[in-house]
Amino acid sequence: MQLTRTPLAALIAAALTAGLAAEAGAQEVNIYSSRHYDNDTQLYDLFTEATGIRVNRIEGTPEEILARLQAEGANSPADIVLTVDAGRIWLADQEGLLQPVDSAVLEERIPEHLRHPDGHWFGLSQRARVIFYAKDRLENPPQTYEALADPEYEGKVCIRSASNVYNLSLLSAIIDHDGEEGARGWAEGLQNNLARAPEGGDTDQLKGLVSGACDIAVANTYYFARAKASTVEGLSEGVDQIGFVLPNQETTGTHVNVAAAGVAVHAPNRDNAVAFLEFMTTPEAQEFFANQNHEFPVVEGVSVGPIAAEYGDFNTDMLNLSVLGINQPKAQEIFNEVGFP
Ligand code: FE
Image 1 (tube, rainbow, N blue to C red):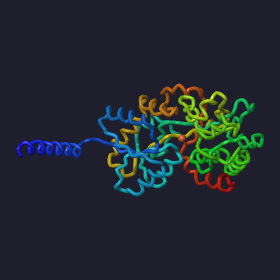
Image 2: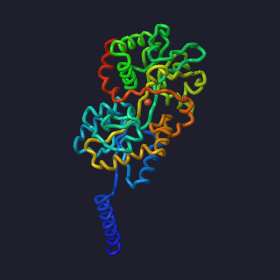
Image 3: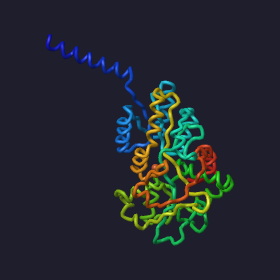
């Protein structure tokens, strides 16, 4: 008996000590994320090393994350909400799921147009939505988003469906720049120019250039970069035949979007959440976070990864990205009105 009781008591004592430690001060931060790469773990480990704050992660689709936050309400353990489109983080904010953060560090490091005006969310990496084309079939690719709707390109364009948030964000920006009527005309023209009924994601649009289904494809920059960096079947083998245009260089700049994060409205570890956001804007974290998905850092002076760097320097749209959310219902309405599939 003696032999078994001693280790058991020791175990209980150890468990109690651990429990107390957790209660008294073990630091943690809980992240609800709809962005999931294996490498994220490495980045979170760096944060833990630097701060002693442990990272717990819940991953899901944006819809799952939002539904979970709503269901949990004030009891939610979420500290950070992370999404991959300004339109989506805007939705979370609209639902009252985020709280304002006042951080001189974040305001200094993240350009104003890439964060919410009152600190409800912050862009952490940038991606551009650009025009790709089949170099051997198209001599004069469109140089602007507006030109995608020109009759000249009838039956040539592949783009994913109107329900996709990347397209809603793009149309939201067009509403701001060209007005509602302009945006409606654009959506109509683009619909006329479709090579086929929208199917699949951005990678599938690029594959359409290789298969010959279309001469023009609209996609985010990192999908093309991925096909260069690794083997994407149906795409990588034809990647050299694909050219790209960074649209609207002479006018509004190329449309960009962000992976963005904000502090959850009921965050139990608010200070840790702010520390996490600030850590994500250090040069070290920026480089890692952006490069793992061939995106562009938001913090100036941080180097761009080798494949994303092939896009060269370009002017980006300086529109505050909260507009992408504010105009989102209107964008959806316009797509519906013109019957964009
Ligand atoms: Fe994506």
